[in-house]
Length: 396
Image 1: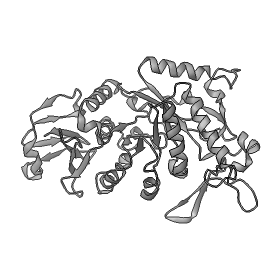
Image 2: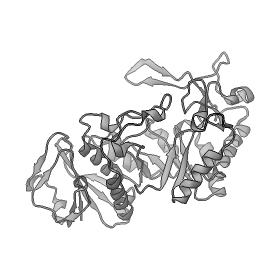
Image 3: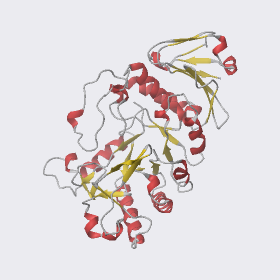
Image 4: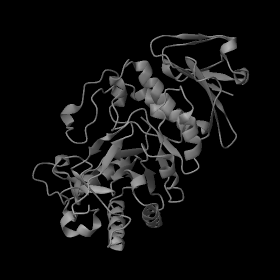
């Protein structure tokens, strides 16, 4: 399908909850991912996987979870001073407060918070993380998605990223920053992150927040778009669940920013939400369609089109209150701007006449209809008929 990275969620042994993000021992592989009876300290299966990916010109990215561990992690016993404690000396679990209801508090009781900022043994703790990154770098892993990056001190990231890139300059670090404030994202500036994740998946084209966020965050690092993630519901399971919507959201994610992520199964219209606690291979569903060839074509188009493969500058050319929107994406390199038109309605087509078109439309040279199969270019029409949830590209 034309991807150059494979990102895998945590593959370490887990605590009592079984959640992939409740890591019990960073240096043991999850027994669910190896044959029964396999020594979980033997990492040869992972090394074999990384080597196979590299042979296919694909790099491997792993999850780096250093803001918390499993409540029953081995580190709780060996290094108890690394953890946050309450007034009675008990381990502190991460929690979240519903902004709409302060009494609605979610506590992740299977997790224990690491005190990366104020631990009395901070140097040893930071060295532990540095050696952990090195351990997997030496296996050939070249990417690290840093879970809840905003919950870890910027100084620690700067230390880890600097040390890792000194050892292996091609190493890529991606900050997972979804759900945090703009101020928390801004604190990561200058730490060395190569990418952030953006929130374009959640944008309904009805308010300016997404473009405003994009303009602010690109000053920190380029970003990665996605039509769904392992934390969200499957797009194919959300109304109306059509092939057109599946393709439109992918096409928009592909062109929105420099990076692009797709969850395994998206190409087949998977409906079952990924579950990092109870998920098993039995959850894999039979395909309801196969977009593999189309996704390959979109990915190649992204890679070969300058304005699609960078952050660029986005501008809304029509009002957000309309059933359609025209967007302009300009290249920072000042080449090849593109006009994007989206039908916000997933259940019916729209016809746009001359008065509906922005003045920039007069400069369009070619039109691309991504949803119609092969991405063939044609001359732009004087009157546009948009299918349900259709997205169009116009080169200027």
